[in-house]
Image (cartoon, rainbow, N blue to C red; front, top):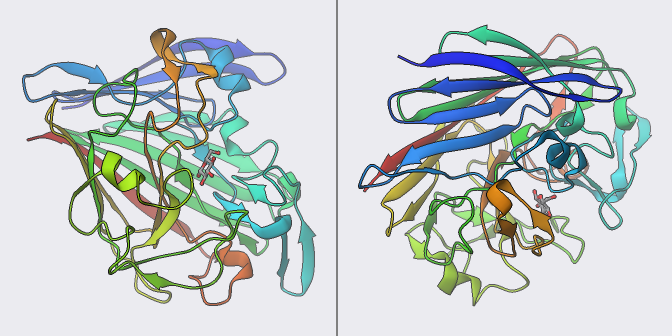
Length: 344
Ligand code: BGC
């Protein structure tokens, strides 16, 4: 049985009141904010029963209002990058704001992470809904979006749904940063990761996929068997992992499949992720630099955490060989991601 409760958490001037929802099962406790559909905390047990909060975040609402790193938030309308913020849909040019080098990232200057969502209680969880108006951040069509978080035992499920009045690209994910030792722990070097992907997308120097779908075999991106994150980070090029791993191929049917497993042997905590999405961005918090003060005064540094952003492949709207990211009027966008918190 999951207990669901909520309370007012604060007020954002010009936007309104923000509530905190609490989902409590016998194994896991999850807190969700109506700002940005943010997962504010996930407390899970270690092998000796010890509870720790395993997601990064802030103590107060102000932290989330000024956050630029998407801690815990749902990002959209289009998560990840769109090259030069430009795309063409049904013969019409669209130009988005540029907010990451020369590209558009995570839905724009005021993406879904900065909106206050409307919350309704559902069985074992909460449904958060949002209307993104036609032209929001430069995107076409009015989009009705919902994210439903439910907690069953050790499984937190996020279900994303959307409908649009005009054809629009869409790509929704949750941007939680995890550290299975506890959110204030220094790094993730002692975590082991495996990702069920035969291929990944190499990127250019602005992190846009080059278009190549490269086999992981024989490369440091082969994570099909568990590897220690610390040792693998030493051999991959650049500041760390920030790549889309391909979980299925363009045109594959909608199915939920295993995506990744991360284990922290010292605490015994394990996170398993499964998803219907065709990709997962494995990001090792390369751009956190200690300037953020998080929960309990923790300083979040480079490699202090990892994200498993289940998603469509980045820049899919501009890359014809990538899985279709367009939502057309009359269609329903629907994806599911499960985060399963167990122990070894
Ligand atoms: C991106 C990173 C970015 C981070 C926070 C990730 O999804 O791939 O490059 O720094 O989000 O914005």
